[in-house]
Image (cartoon, rainbow, N blue to C red; front, side, top):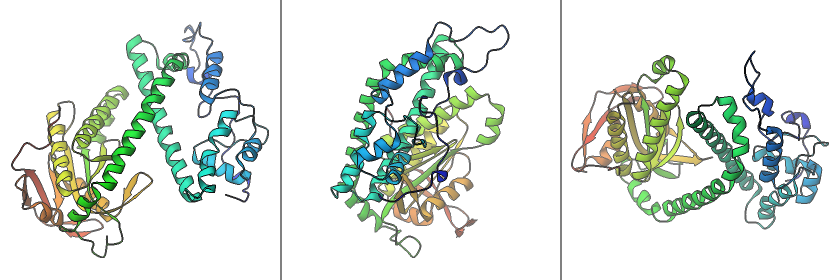
Length: 388
């Protein structure tokens, strides 16, 4: 982690006396209209924001970037790589941007590199994962808390955002405890998948799609599934923001529950679409059928389309890549409302399982794959995934 980089390669600095990642509280509150009362009257929100920042960062910002780099034992270039991976903005040499607690925590990854536990590339990648995931988590949590305050107290969005600054101190500890608890549970589940289910996945990979020229170099055999909502774009144009937000939240919550109960993993959500993986073809098929059923049963949601493909994928940066992912996406796009599709190779893996009914459809020309025979997947014996 040595060398130097030009400062003009980096984004413009943020003043060190403002909370990182936010504007001033005046900007959050917005301008007042004639005759409008100040929504934060009586709240010393500047002092509250300063106190909150000190609480979160462990004290006042007293260190400059070169102080931190020297304290961590890195060149300024390498130190910038580390805090840029965490999602921090750029700082100038004169900014008092860091606290003593920052310095202690920023020593962690370089220490692992020096001890040979991680390579530099791995350390940066792991750090970037932490930065990106916690950034998204914080935005999600803040928006959820703001929305709750607006609904519960009948106040404006701007007022809720300012009041939240005063309310957050009492939430920091419980939210932090839940974060660490959830991370440990998720890591345990990841180890379980890695150590216990790997054998099952490898055995299942011998059924059907064993690694042809296209996917042989890819290491993981997985079920890859997509689910999306029909006519979402046109519906979203007719909905106000709150109604659209409720629709998306209902859809995502429903899908996340089904995927979790089915033993899969929700990879990501993008508006009206979710992407999931499972270790075996049968688990992926059960999740696909349950998603279709639950979407159809919810009167708040439009009709859904689901597709699932068994094949090999590359897992990087919390996402998955490869032809299997692309084929599952293409099949979702050509599925009829309420339909679940698989490709013929996946159907071949599932055909002897009485839990599934497979109906071959007409061959279609699928972009990027040429002629593909979609197969409709239906419920056979059993009830499938049951939600509490």
